[in-house]
Length: 199
Image (cartoon, rainbow, N blue to C red):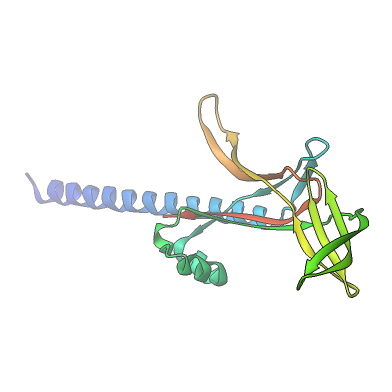
């Protein structure tokens, strides 16, 4: 084999290795670009709210995709709370946070009742309200209301994927959404976020 042939084979092998390395780097950059684009869209989009039926409301948000390091850097307070629960951030798959507000109009009856305190009967006013969505009971003594309010709420979370089709058979994930619904009409979902931790 001549020197020119061996040199050209060596040059081709080096070129093939360089091409392969560049191709891997381009693929990695494309994935990072797609993740950045999806995160930007998720941050700029608003919460979509809907009324499912007379008592069920729902809110939909897009998912953020962060690495464990990015999560610790940008969501430090949340990461601290998760660490206090005994969960390592590197073991975290996803994190969700919801802010709900309960706004209930109170329409309760006030009636007189007798309670026994220190072997003497005292007349006080009693307040009660029982609906499927709120239970209120209390006593009015000395111009003060003391009692209990119980508001049962079930939050249901669904995570779904929107695909973008390239060709007939190939499809790629365009966005990941999270929908939160509440079964109590007095509960309003003010804020919701879902962060998928990339490994």
